[in-house]
Amino acid sequence: MTLTIDGQPVSAEPGDSVAAVLLRLDPPFSRTTPVSGSPRTPYCMMGVCFECLASVDGVASTQTCLVQVREGMRVERQHGRRVLTMVMSQDTAVSDVDSLNGMPRGVSP
Ligand code: FES
Image (cartoon, rainbow, N blue to C red; front, top):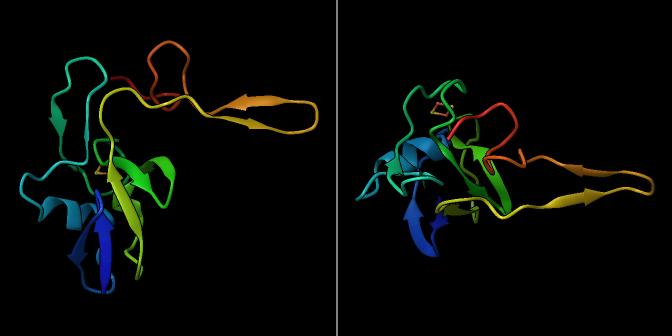
């Protein structure tokens, strides 16, 4: 099957995680840090380290080690600080990003 990473078509096998596909790229990284801009690479492959965050089908900071590839999936590696997105309901504004460090709540840069 074929997905796109940063707009480039990439082949993958059914059952591959997105993180596994990112590790096969050259250079193999999923994101850069908001502080230094250094590249980070999927590490634990089991949802613990948060080094594999990338945008998957428009959803930023997705743990790509926990997502299997699908035909036509769009993946963008994240660079630096995530753009703040707000989810609005009728009465409540909710942010899924820590306002101090720009990372998902509970994640340190
Ligand atoms: S590789 Fe560690 S959380 Fe995904």
